[in-house]
Length: 336
Image (cartoon, rainbow, N blue to C red):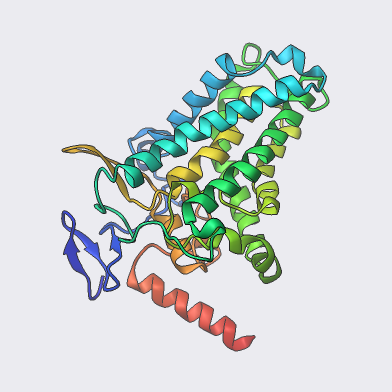
């Protein structure tokens, strides 16, 4: 990067003091021609690829949730406040554990200081946030809106499956199909998120809905689900795919938990988490950080499907991408 200096273990910090990785963002070898089977398999099964570690972790959490933390499925044929409340309490507890772990390690303990932190500042305390506090604002919208909307979608979908109002299937009878659906859910989420995200960047919806999330320019783990209730309804609607595609309750739980948990990982504000000396793990959130930084780029999630590249909104972290973005936005504003 032009004008950059090396800092924090050889990585680049731009002239505005923001930390950036030296490695540019590159779409995976998924939609390429000619095919690259070896590269695809490395992306699919390799570390810091599609499955490992994060999607595998979310699948494990979903499986544990379905087996041990979900009320009896047979009892869901009728709506009762009891089992719906259990879902809500379970979802609150799980989100506290997942997002809370990121926040505790990186923002309460400050275990690695600002090493690998994109923006060197910590969370804000100013009047643009509820309670004049970014963290309290984020927690408010997460638990007052996000978790209730998540639970409502889950309860209605599981109730519909239990009554066979929507197509469903069992792992025992269709193990291969169930595994394929589980594998495809993060890709479906990527496509759905891009479409919803572009929609809420439409100026009328941005001003009335999405601006609430974008108050978090300097993001933290609890920023991920800090959204307007209308945005929560749109964002969580990814689960409605299971109203059309034959699915298992585990798919429903995994889809919704992925929607709820991945944003805390994607909004840590850190490129890597340092577990101990010599042991570091990428969080995989630089692409979305650039969206919060520039607003006009990287509308997709982690780039598993290169939709931003197809539609000309991709920013890989380079000065060249920034120049293209500025030219595109300036040209659009000039025409307006």
